[in-house]
Image (cartoon, rainbow, N blue to C red; front, side, top):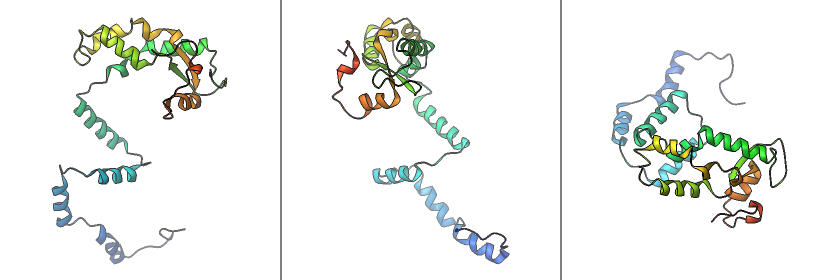
Length: 191
């Protein structure tokens, strides 16, 4: 095993020698100041991203990231996210699961992580909703649109839902296969 041997006490001189390469010099501070606000190349950004994969940020760092995102977006949660987080959406999911007896409609497994799937896609229903209520701005009138969405029937039709396990849902609809087999969707396909 690597690392520091247990029980070894370093002398002060040795500790100082270990610190030297890590000491922040004036040269380093000047270089850091020059980097502030500088645009990174795509390659450099990718390399930073790769190096941070799997790295867990501290709570303090996560709060800083969140604060910067809120500052950039103005603290606005997109309308479609608010609809998906609503109580009506959760009730719709439960009703779909109950109707399908908490069973995947593709592999017929029970006791696995279930996903509710919109036969007519949520994004299509959402676009229709925005067209029907085009007099409202999705940014300025977001509270009004969320309230209207709770009464918009196409969002909450149980017949438009189907239960899949996580694996089947991914394979059928999110694996990059654009030729979705509509046989699996039942008698109602997307328009």
